Image (cartoon, rainbow, N blue to C red):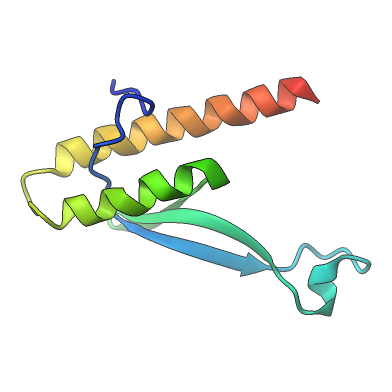
Length: 102
């Protein structure tokens, strides 16, 4: 498996998107209209759209990766899948470290 730290030149197939939503807490700023924002990588897998939530630190690297996918379409699907799995493992490790630090 490819490591995300090593893979700053990796190709990711998908779109970088920002989800905006309310959390439901009546006292939160989102109840007044300032919604929470979460950057995500949106991609198709098996005919279904999937989303992978990103950390703020990974947005710049992910932003560049879909641009590289457009440079050589078709032949890079396996590399894109490996990069997506590396990103998923990186994000899970970051979440586990943050949870352990609490």
